[in-house]
Length: 443
Image (cartoon, rainbow, N blue to C red; front, side, top):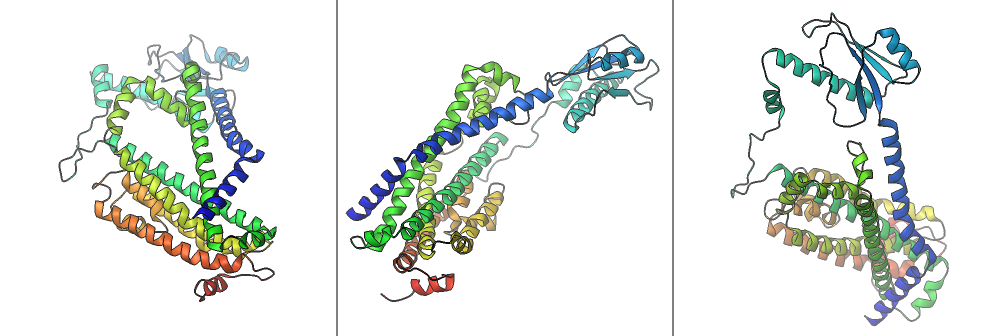
C-alpha cells in the first residue's frame, strides 16, 4: 500500500508542478468566458433596436403595439408611403408597416410591411408575433371582451395536479429541477470518464515508450504501479475539475452581481451563461420562490453522496481499462485508437440511456442501464435526481452500487494481468484477442 501511495504522490506532483497544468486549469475557464462574452456581444449587437415605423391610417392599434423588450421597436408616425420609404432609405428606420384607412379586422387585406434589407428568420418571427397578438386582442375586444378577460384567458393555469401513489405532490418545478440535476450530473461523470481515463492511458504510454517503466518495475510490482498511477492522476483530475467549476461559475456570478446592467441587457437573448442566469434568478423574487420550492423537494445529500460514489467507482473502473490499453500499445497512437472502441462504446451508450432515464426514470432500459456496471455511473445519476423511491427504489440503488464494486474489482483484476505483460512488451502489434489471452493466462 505504501508503494501505491508513493507512485500516486509522484504522479500527482509531477503533473501539478508543470506549467501546462496551471495554464490549462486557469486558461480553459478564461477561454470559456471569452467565448460567452463574444456570444453575448454579437447576440445583443445584432438584435437590439430594430426600429419599425408604423403608419396606422385605420387606427387599428390605437398608437401602441406591446413588446417584451427592446429587440423590436414600433414607432407610430403620421406619414404616407413615400415619406416612409424616404425615411427608411436615410436609415431612420429599418422597416415600416403601413396600415391603410380601408383596412378592417374582418377583411382579407394584408398589411404592407417593407424593410430596407432582408429580415432574419428570428426577427421576422418576433415581428409577426407582436403584430398578430395585437390584432387578436383587437378582434376579441370587438366581441365585447375586455382586456382583463383576455389576460385571464391567456394566463397559464395548471388544471391537473400530479402526485405519486403515496400522495406526494409533484409540481412542474420539481420535475424540471430533477431533470436538470440528473442531466448535469450524468454529463459531468461522462466528461470525467473520458478526459481523465484518456489521461491515465497517455501517462502509461509515455512511461512505456520512454522506458521509464522498466526501471520502476524493478522495485514496484506492476499492479502497484498501475493503481498508483490511477489514484495520482485521478486526484489531479478531481482538483482540476473542481477549480474549473469554481472559476467558470464564480466569474459569471461576479459579473452578474457587479454589472447588473449587463445582465438586464441580456434579458430575452437566446443564449446566456448559466451563472448569469442563476444570478438573475436570485434577483427575481418570483423565480426565486419557484426555484426554492423545487429545490426543497430535491434530496441533495443523497445526490451528492451518490455522485461521489459513482464518480469514484466509474473512474476506477474505466481508468483501469484505459491503463490496460496504454500498456499494450507501442509508439503508434493509432494502435490505441483501434483498441479504445470497446471501452468508449459503453460510455456513449450510457449517455443514450441517460437521455431516456431523465424523462422516464422507471423504464426498463433505465433500470438496466443503472444496474449494469459499465453504464450505471452515468444512468443512475439521472434516476437518483428524482429521489427514492420515486425515481429509483432503495433495493435497486444498493444493488447498483454492489454491481459497480464487483465490476471495478473484476476490471482491475483483468487490467492488472494485461498491464503486467504489456508494459514490458515491445515491437508487436496487439489486438484485443491477444490481450484477452494475457488476462486469462496463469501466472
